[in-house]
Amino acid sequence: MSSFLDPYLDDSHRVFRELCRRFAEEQLAPHAEAWEEAGSFPRELYAQAADAGVLAPTWPEALGGGGGDTFHGVIAGEELLRGESTGVVVGLGSLQIALPPILHLGTPEQHRRFIVPVLAGEQIAALAITEPGTGSDVAAVRTRAEPDGDGDGYRITGSKTFITSGVRADLVVVLARTGDDPHGGLTFFVVERGMAGFEVSRALRKTGWWASDTAELHFDGVQVPASHRLGDEGSGFSALMRNFEGERLMLAINGTALAALSLEHALAYAHQREAFGRPLKKLQVIRHKLAEMQTQVASAQTLTYAVADRMRRGEPCISEVALAKNHASLVARDVCWEAVQIFGGMGYMRETVVERFARDARLLPIGGGTQEIMNEIICRFGLGL
Image (cartoon, rainbow, N blue to C red):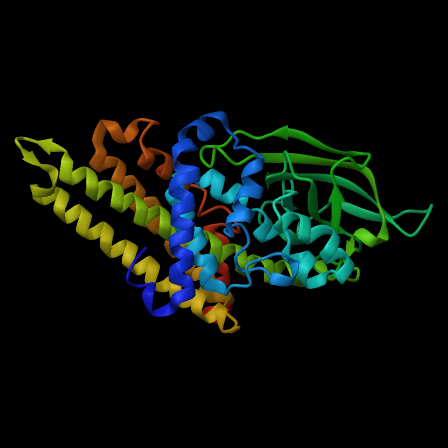
């Protein structure tokens, strides 16, 4: 998508970029507006994306993934947005936040049972962390998993909200409290569709990301066998912190891509649209606005790619990924809005991609930890405050 990415790529990345772009332009873009208005996309798209090799590019080949590195994930995140629907991309991508706890904490049997069908596009996975009233405060999780007196399993009781892909997920990776310690008392479990007491309370309506389903979930004494617990009791918090780094990088990539694509659309519009007898591109106010947008996009890309490279090398980057997420979120907010302004009246119409992207960008300073939480992480781990 930009020359700033090129130094991090080899031939396999470049081939993969063309594959992702072709899939987005041929399989996603022609349907994006209809899927957005419907608030959903066909379930079959998961299998199509898996068959095309774009659903799980960074996951182990032994489990059905592509076996690629961090930058194969960066490329997929950027190029699939050329399909013009953030909702579709995040819906397809919910496995990227749902499955890591299974991968890192689970047994080979759990990998086979829960991960393989999802990477094949046969099942849908969701991650359930946030609860009504807790927001970004993970230590305040109240959903409980109590030992089942009738066997060696657990009964899960509580509610979760803002769950991406939660409406139609076949399996939900749930963070529940197994002890009273705010951090050490958290454990992950896999809850499957159809388990007695598990229900989707309601589908949630959002400002953006329309094509992705978002749910509120309720667990009423859901009986879960011990084989559905991930790792030891109390292992959930550390796994979640690891998960957050990957999620925040994904959101930073999403922000840089939304901004870059909005700039592309605005630039194309400035070439074709005339005002006062001249193309918009000849008006200094528009030219300078585009130059400032390009500067912002370049800064977000440079930071995000540098952090992705650190993650590829296995270096710790808790503060750095928070920096990248915050900066990319604010750049996306500003650049997407400026694109709407350049489009004028058409920028306010739902048929225009930049209108959709401007709405979608509003989630970025909230999801995966708010902008304010990211600033606290930067202060603590980056500035030593």
